[in-house]
Amino acid sequence: MKKIILAAAAMLAVTFGIQAQDQVRLNPNHPDVYVVQKGDTLWDISGRFLAQPWFWPEIWQVNPQVENPHLIYPGDRLRLVYVEGQPQLHLERGPAAYKLTPAADSTSLHPQVRREAVGEAIPAIPLDAINAFLSRTRIVAPDAFRGTPYVVSGADQRILMGAGEKIYARGDFRVPLASYGIYRPGPVYVDPVTGETLGQQALDIATVDLLQLDPDRREEFAVATLGVARTAREIRLEDRLLPVEERSIAALFQPGAPPMPVEGVILGVEEGVTQIGKYDVVVVNQGEREGLQPGHVLAIYKRGAIVRDRIARDNVKLPDERAGVMMVFRTFEKMSLALVLEADRPLEVMDLARNP
Image (cartoon, rainbow, N blue to C red):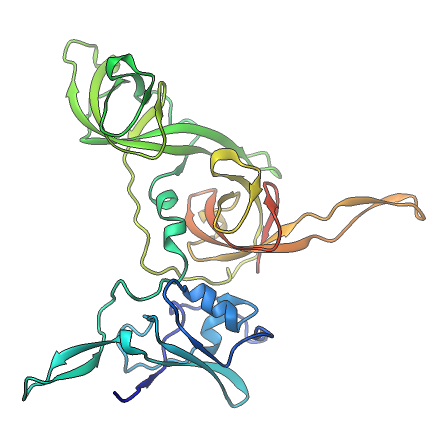
């Protein structure tokens, strides 16, 4: 089968706010040719070629004749070439990019380039690393839990409940919903610089379906019987009910440097752990009002320590040191959730988030 040399569109076909004077820096250990493997992501592959993976579009050649050119499959070959002294990547399709269809005038088969997005194409980033977090856990207003229904008991008066069981909740069900999310109130986040209250974490616990409402109770204190359809954690007494907010991951993110200056801080991480590593999800004190959008890439910096200068007899702050990279995948008005894509050392709450 004749090898068809194609060039794919930009990693995610977006403008990343790169200024003309910015120079693409190749990874010193970059390969000349790389064969895409199952389990690869576009982010991982771009890191093989580039020191700054979000500059991928700068070396990615566009071929407008190919539909859905952003799809890359295991077995495809990426070849680094130079055009007028500038590095570019060319894509040589492997067998997985083709499908076999009968020829119009015979019963024989002939190859065609795939025209639809399929599951075999590699993702931009490891989507499964954030799927559960993105679709469930939320940042809500600090008063979002006020007056919401809460769990009062499980079947047989159990205090810990799981999937497949019945639970009982009490509260205002005057506008009943078919399903509810059960959340546990998490920390309230306060901006360390301004002191402004930014929001509260609503930790995902479970999803329940409404089975029955007790008609003999006062409306604002009705007791509902619910069936547990899904659990992420054991349900406890006093866990709260909120309307379900399902959010699916977009098939492709659009990693790129934000066009505006960013000076943020990591405020927290799910489950309240203190050490943060690769593929952990963190909370940042910047959101939609500051211009952050899903796909924006931020560098993570460790704060420089304060040391004593014995000669000058005063204190001096050491420089902040870059320690990782993260990508925003969900934004709220005042805060964002980001996935740590690279971590050169253990990261912590209160580390800095800046332009990459």
